Image 1 (cartoon, rainbow, N blue to C red):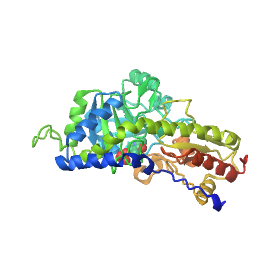
Image 2 (cartoon, helix red, strand yellow):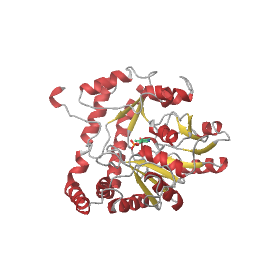
Image 3 (cartoon, rainbow, N blue to C red):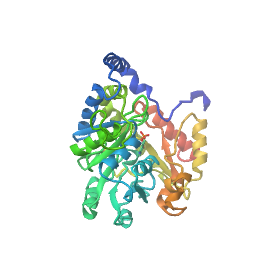
Image 4 (cartoon, rainbow, N blue to C red):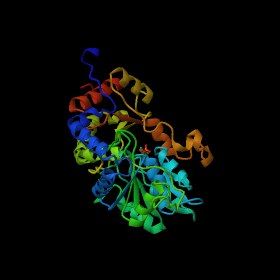
Length: 384
Ligand SMILES: *Cc1c(COP(=O)(O)O)cnc(C)c1O
């Protein structure tokens, strides 16, 4: 086995950067020559380019996806005493953003098959204080825009999308970030569009929201040394924007690579379904951008535990991940929300069963095939 060991990292960014390194270096040089490191030209250009790529007019570059959520909610007028619906099985940053805006995150369980927020359960979590819902387009798959819009109209709530894992994802004719009044993106290096460090963006179709967000990210100052809000200091660096500007034209092709790889995984996994190993349901959604490719290992049918599978993968040179191993409501920092084990059964079940397989543009067909072949051998299923 060790003789023909193929290494498969969980993420590898060298493939995407290698062909555009010269262009990136040039873009960096241009910023250095201009010297406009904060709120510079490349930032303004990239804000417009990215927002338009997502189908809306305005972009506000900030230091992280978390800040994009916090500032975005504040710009919507959400603050102390307000409640915001969020899925229980998201990355904690979604909750952090809500709390930083001064509001209270109200958790809602997800569907077991898609891992996306359950809108029927969301209805039950609405109170007179509920102002907005944050659908998280988890793993790169959008929550149904039609259902979201219907839900928001029925209950008179704002939609603020957490699209940190869904750059250029689409569904039912909508692009991620264009469904609600505003949306947050992250440019953390391993996201579908990643910077050389941290970064994020708030996008919106409303000029006044963009203006308020620009004030909030810049010491609460709509003009120099004039402060209408407390705000914060959280801008996307011009250097990062210049790098992202070079990368953006390639994003669609990179997403396509992810999607093709996912279809390959889907096909190769079919013989293992009877062992309780299945991908998270993509509902034949062709606009899925597969930030992550996640499988579920159902212990009632699978001869091995997830932990054993992950360790066996490791021994065979294959890196995997768990997104995420502990649900938000059971994290020590969020005990004040007042939930205990059993509060969100589907989110809890997913935490125990999910495993993320290697996924990135540049992952070869041979590597993907090797991953599933090795999985077959590990679980003693059908040998290739
Ligand atoms: C990455 C991520 C964030 C936070 O983005 P940062 O840039 O790391 O602050 C928020 N929500 C989700 C779903 C994410 O995956």
